[in-house]
Length: 425
Image (cartoon, rainbow, N blue to C red; front, side, top):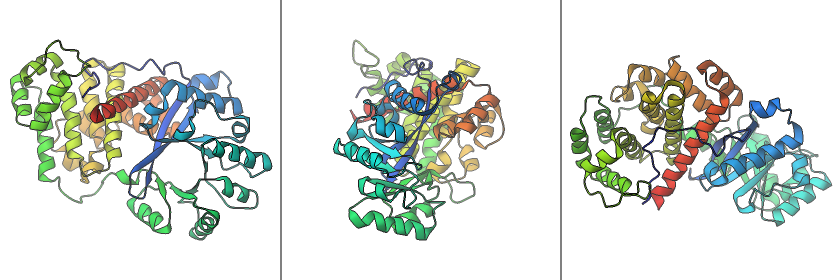
């Protein structure tokens, strides 16, 4: 199993550095809460905006530039990409970088069903593309789009139930058109929308944080947190770390797999934890162990929470190094990886923090207090949701350039993707 190299201090990714595009993604799940795809959210960066690139040309350049620079596999982890397209882009031709079997083309809500639009949709569907109608409202100007659509997206919070049912009846009348409910933010909304007949669901309902006391941290998960706490004890020795890992068979195996992987290119097989620690270094072993502990803690939670935690961890680590120096790498990594533990464990964050090996400043940040570390975390959270206005405001407050945040997020997506590939290879 090839594990991506993680020994060096994280650096900002270079591959997407020249792309004048901000990119985020929102998960889309099916009825079984399995990940179906991501909607990709694009915005020209401040540099692109200052250059005066606007309108339809900007739409095409933003999409083409982002997909070419970042890569669909990095952005979606191999799942489908839902991408908004304008009327002009629809008529002028979809960029060649968008492969038909990987992309769902979302027609924006202001597109009407004139002859040109309908014919363009027919051509694209014949070419293998999936057509979705974004924020769709049924009326005389849009009804003609239903026969050429594969997915209809409905704003679940803003659409009256009677209107949604009428739309669903129209969609089901001719053939099986899939219905997607947007802005599903609670489990109750997911269950209601599922009962109402929706097929797909977009939002963060699977990972709502717990703010009130519901349950204590289960004993077996508490054991994982205690192991994490011990590993990050500043006074712990390499011998003590070796002893802790040797008593956890799965961790022991993974450390040895890592050090013997192609990424480390050892000339002879490493068969002891002690030698592995010397080769990898204490910080790297602790970082990897934190990821493996997260996987153990989150076995019963939604897999996307683990992905989001991994991306946040790497992103916060990279930003901490960029803004505060390499000595703060582990602190940033731990803050990111712990930021969703209340949702993963379904326990209040204050209770979880009592068992975590974090500094007072990091704990304050995870409690939501207004601290420099919290502002950094808020930058990452706003960016990952595609909340561009909040992201821009938070970067200013945190003293982070938006392009630095963009590259850190890209680096984190690449890293998380490499982890996923390594885990299944």
